Length: 574
Image (cartoon, one colour):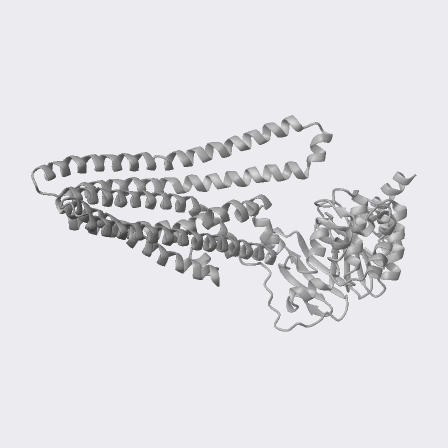
């Protein structure tokens, strides 16, 4: 919780401090009422003094109203404090994830991050409310009522002194045993979220292969595992309440029995017994509230740990640059670069990469599946950090630039095209928030997207579904290319981003690039040789190493891998 306390600030911190103060006022009023009741019975009723009964009764009414006011205000301030606390945690968690490099994101599954930002934060929010209300009110009530009970009759107070250790023992056992069970339950929540996410994303594939029954069965298994984990955790916690209730009833019966005998023999007044029972109720109810609060804390402890795991995750790629030096051009130099996802140089994905790309050049990258083509280009904007060697952009090591400066100068059209909910225009303005309508249209024409956009009734104001589900794969690729063009980058990287368009459209896009991207370094990863045959140089990758570099004609003569790919594709054309 220390890590999370630092997130409390402003009015949420003020409300968190104000709540316990209001709770103290409420407890003082509540503890004073049974004492006045005893005085009414022992003095007013005993002496038939109506004026005394009315005066003390009026004081009780005032105290009850004051207690109600303090309690209502405490509930209001606690709600604001806990909701605000949850909001601050959610903001900090989301901001932390935004700072993650790709390798950081790889350590947490998407479903797990969703659970941490929803269920775990809700649990923590509820725990904070319990902490500033119940865990303030209950101990103060316990101590105050105990003092008042002892002051009335010490001998009778021995009854609940026997009950308290029993209740504390039960509570301790529940806390120690329940935590690992709730931790396991939250992992099952992650699995359920992962199953739902996977099914919704792949719903078209599910229907195409008629796998609805299989998916329903899989979901039922996951949901059943969550149910079993939840029941296993909850059934331990629910033991707490029956034990508490039983102890309360046993204590009250014992006190009535012993106290009744004391009244008969004259060792205790009737009003004191009534008052004493009220205090015993307050003592035992405060213990019950402490038990419930600790149970909530047990549930939230697992959630808090999972939240703090994300907050404590250090971004693998820190921003070390002290000055905001701009990138002068799009030149790229790989100087003996090696990269490993695990950081272990004995298990490299890329090794010994030496490659010089001049500013304004168009470079094609070709290689088989798993040859690390995508990994290579991810190093340029520092989405992953070079494990060994150095990578220079614009004549400087990429680690000497601020990440925002570097990534603003590099536009990437990723292998998996991603569009967001909103209009086409809003999606395109991710590339340049200040782009004019004329610039947007120009970028779309270059990406061969303008024609199909204008066929929609709302044109550029057409609302895209989540992930762009209402446009085809080829249309989605062209929109992503247009978005990248609007950045006016010094380097543009196309990672197999025309695979879903026909060869004629692909050719038109490449022709438009020559006009629109004059002076911009262009890197094209492609499976079709026709997409890169006009490049200034082509890099052939094989098993994470550069097998050859040259022009289309040079590689046809000298490189076996390139020649085999070319011949196989020519046969396909024939």
